[in-house]
Image (cartoon, rainbow, N blue to C red; front, side):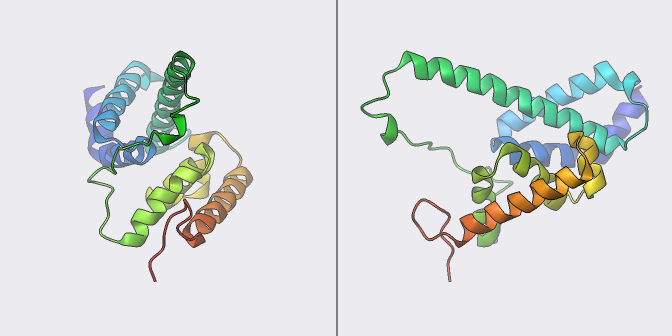
Amino acid sequence: MKTFFDELYENYHHDLFQYLIYMVKDRDLAEDLVQEVYIKVLKSYQSFDGRSTEKTWLLSIARHVAIDHFRKQKRKRNRIMDFFDWNDKGEQLKDQSSLPDEIAVQNDEMKQVYKALDNCTLDQRNVIIFRFIQGMSIQETAEILNWSESKVKTTQHRGMKSLKEMMDKPMEGGVQREA
């Protein structure tokens, strides 16, 4: 068990952490979610049957942990929305959180892509992160998401189309592209 866990940590910790950073855009939260993933790995490592690679198994667990986090946040947000009267000043409230240092890549275009990911659906964001940031194949991505390869391809196509539209939009609320 210890050897299995140590190898898993050594080989895939960076990929796991990077995936969660891209999903939640908060370093501290990503670290907490990584811990949740490792707890789930410790509890279920006997169930790993080798039908997929260790990396796809680990990232599949991470995906489910991220989805659980978003569901909890949505329930929490709904309770807050019900509590306050948002009619007067609701549109004036803005999210002040900044991008994590690890994600703020020197290349301006990468920053724009990162920002434009927010406009993709959760499924599109998952596929784009797995395929282009994690460098996974269509087959590996399909295994992690428990989808067919054609669904991964379709979602990837739609996600890339959405990213392109956001990158091409002028300043009007989209991502501004410098000439």
